Image 1 (cartoon, helix red, strand yellow):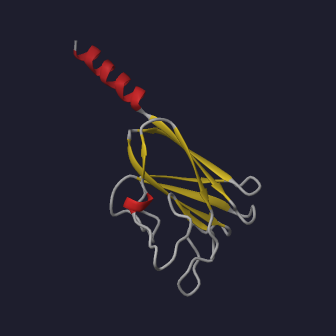
Image 2 (cartoon, helix red, strand yellow):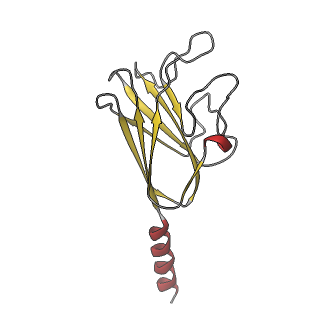
Image 3 (tube, rainbow, N blue to C red):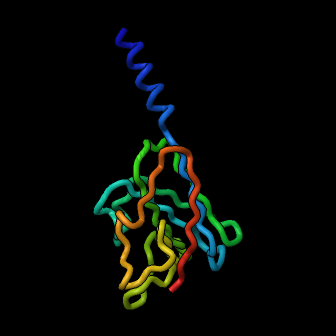
Length: 139
């Protein structure tokens, strides 16, 4: 009986798992890779050290786009940040203050001092398989 209940619980969890596809558009070149960071809780954005993510993927660029697929996600609220790591050093290179490489964030068309990112503004609901697009921002 315990085995059957466990099997049923695992089946229900599998049925509720979602897939999120994130497409980064508007990349200025195909150098390096694009890092997609998926967040699932308050206080994780902004993530200056690129370490507070729930899941992360680095993918190759095709033309002016890159695509990451996050599978087996439970229903919930998520946010995605993206950066174009042109020199493959694993960090966002910055000038005095602003990024020198392309960045993007779910639900944001621009990023500046008056529109600082946070999880609440960047998050969206995932309750079924979903695809979102994030346009890259080069400052």
